[in-house]
Length: 312
Image (cartoon, rainbow, N blue to C red; front, side, top):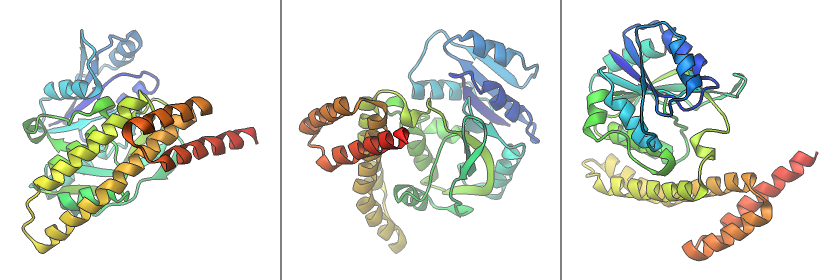
């Protein structure tokens, strides 16, 4: 059986998300919906579905994002686990295709599929890049650090006992990068399998983790992400020439990857704040952290370009 955990925070597209799960052709699953805010709209929407596969839980305490993910995981009864989102939707063959992968690659602990990116109206924006049907954990990590891959969370299915054995999802501030690091850990030993079919539609919205929340916390998360990857790479004991070459390439890729993440965060921050306040903030931050000044100039230029565009 598959356990699908759905931490319900937002209600706008929740009914669509639940409907897409209940419409799966593969029927052996449970849907665990956790409402830790006791939100009345969420409660009403979930209880409007009369389906015994739904386990609806209201919590008395609001936990940080990753702690809440792990709480949802603790309720799972299935051999396989998916962390779904309250504003994404899945194709009717989503579960059946991932089960086929799990049967085809019994040694793997993690499986994923291609993703269709949609806007708030459900219109397609683009598809994520295709991956090989199977790749080693190091190849998976390398392609992510090179920027060849775009990962989210709902398109991944993992073996429940393996995820629980590593302590659940890796904890980072605002959950920024937590899913990535968790997938890297689960793929390290036995690799990862993939379906090229776009079976999940990820919805771009203002509430997504990558562009919401405290900038300082997200910047801290990016730094911790880099530290975690560095520690993870150093823990690898290469046994073949190929692994040794990958090991050195990963070490070389990491600084640029971290720099790109910080540039992205600063650009988002620039777009969401007054230009002068933004400049003062980053000059102060630069003095504290010895930030490269070109990051400030780049993020300011992005803000300026956006303002010019909006005036047209």
